[in-house]
Length: 246
Image 1 (cartoon, rainbow, N blue to C red):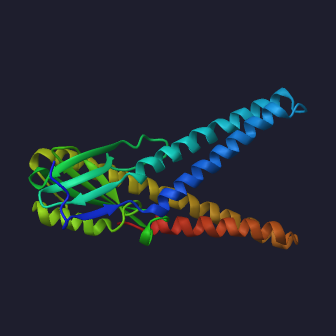
Image 2 (image 1 turned 30 degrees about the horizontal axis):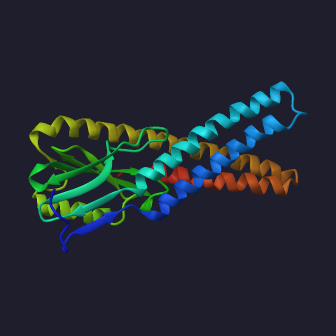
Image 3 (image 1 turned 90 degrees about the vertical axis):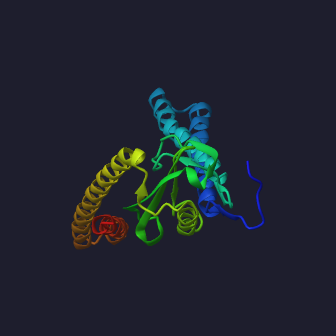
């Protein structure tokens, strides 16, 4: 494996998002422990209440552990651009979905082994500019994905890979064309799904807005304010998902 030179460029994960995942996982686990302790120690609870607490704690255990696993993988992300190639500790596959495994792989990819670079974009209210950009790197050593959600300066990283490998963005080797075709079809389905979710949010926001009007008419201002906040959040999220086409 080539040595790290002084001129190497190093790219890492966004540390803030790693800590958000760690803190979120810890919070879910604390809630899960609290529910289990409540079920064990409070003797006044009947069997139904104990069973309900136990059932509610299970998804919290699962989600908390997944978030910690997620954070541990992302904390290790690192890409070093060297003269001979790319030394990467990255994530395989294309996207990261909740409760889906996040496989991490380490590899050294010579520039001559880069088989393709594809860029995809889907709406995401939590991403910069409300658009989550995901780049797919195809190589003989494995396929990796890089997103602007998790990598610092990911666009510059892709520019460096493209320039040094001679592989233009959104081009793939003929042997990897079937993979690229499946990827584009998957992204299209994802966009359609997210737009449908956006319309559902807009419709729910409209119904909540009608409920707010009715509550104001009855003088229930406190509840109306809370429901109005929910309606505003749903509407803003829905508009982002519906309007974003790239």
